[in-house]
Length: 505
Ligand SMILES: Cc1ncc(COP(=O)(O)O)c(C=O)c1O
Ligand SMILES: N[C@@H](CCOP(=O)(O)O)C(=O)O
Image (cartoon, rainbow, N blue to C red; front, top):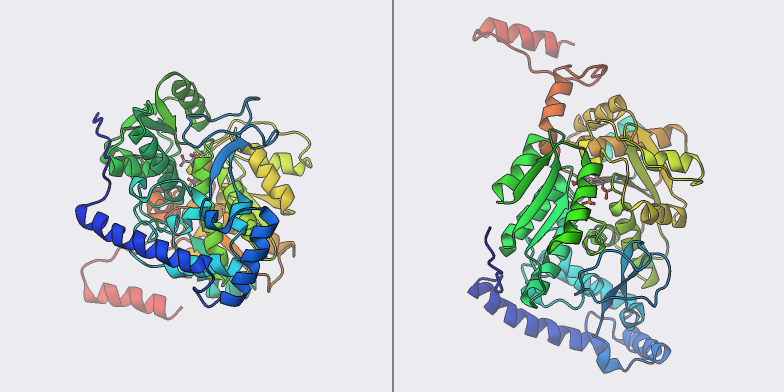
């Protein structure tokens, strides 16, 4: 494996452009601090003065944002630099990345909105990325030249008008296409943050010879791509024969060391945790809270795409359960910093074959018990012992959240039904859509509620099960919306017969 630490990630042209841009951005930010940018002068001046007085921070230090690791639950005085190789608190609990909110609050909401809006859709390094366009809220301390990005994020949030109207009687249904991304899933958002930090630490001389993860296919694809972009060796542990071919070929193509292990995801997760405790391999699963800093930007993006309005419900397919907390964190930072005025109600959707969170929810969070996850077409969420269970329960209780489940038939039908209105859903998005159907049927979600379904991966990663659905080859599944191709002889009359019988229906 190559040990090349690409200390220079940028081409010469990019680096040159970046110098100009950095200068321009600093000047812009300086103007903003003086309150003359973005047309918010009067209120910004007033807010800046008040904020500075409140926080006792001198204004000239206003751009010194910082973040550190603290225990997710427990003593917030226990803290670690993000440059430390650490995954657990002293008590063995999860960590979180905590931002200096007082420093961020020195700027009024209008400043952040204008800054984030101004960066969308540009090629300016690194702000062309939907993650790094929110850099001050993600990893404020990282140097631009250490960032490893493929301009992920900025995914489309589209109005599912016909599907909502015809199938659910809804007027305000939206789908956030997080799978329209470099490696085809939302994991890119987290991986750009984590691999950038690893890139920085390696340049600092930290003993990290590789990055590693356990995966159901999407984390491994994202990790291997970002690591390859940075010239960092990657190692992925995959449950043998439990991920799609499209997912498997991704780390292979990107040069990762791929270990196909005769176990399930939970077994791979246990192994990678043991291995990363022994060897200088940096753990890249969402147990590592750096990942969630990138993933949370999808929630900030949703607020931004709705012109800083918050939807009523956000429905997320859940497996290892990092993403639901990441979304919660994105929304709650927007609220705490005054960009929005409330939080959405969060819904986690699980496959009935892998539903430990759903079971705990049904018992009123009384007791969480890991399960043995059974095979599911939503193979990326075949997880029985989610590492972020505490984070997920917190996010759900803070937002009056809901957990739903979907059977194999419900998820495949929901994906196929929605596909008939122009989407191309992965089974995980099918799980979220099936949960939505149930919540509409029970009138929990009203016709005019604004709902965002998070589509977590691209449907093209899961063509095998989608094709089998349309060929009616899935055991125990009726395939209500199957649309198999019609085999026809090379004959004008035969073609006309088929067209006639179809068009006259
Ligand atoms: C496509 C897809 N959807 C949903 C999830 C669930 O995300 P999380 O593990 O953060 O709950 C995963 C991975 O776990 C995934 O790969
Ligand atoms: N679906 C995931 C499972 C691991 O999740 P992570 O977010 O903890 O890395 C995958 O694609 O591997």
